[in-house]
Image (cartoon, rainbow, N blue to C red; front, top):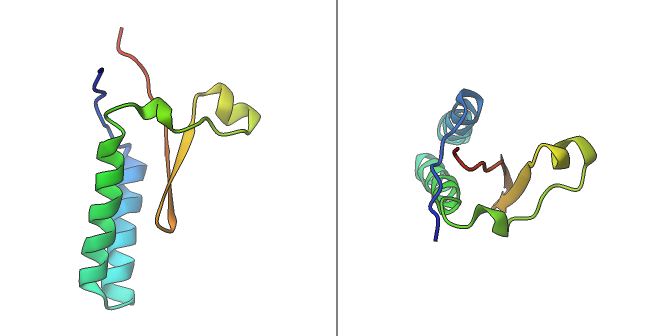
Length: 85
């Protein structure tokens, strides 16, 4: 089975940190923040194996670009996978 490399864009990483900070500092729930970030990171890491198991988005432009959307809890993870040449 092929294993893919997981790379986050700067924006995706910043979004993850913003989620953590909001839950930790605004909702005053540091343990919940840690749990949610761990769940999101785990879901992203799971995409290293068989990312095509998640179907393409049905919207034209995003579909043509190969964008997929995975639901994790109350969050969406958008991603694409490409083979290295």
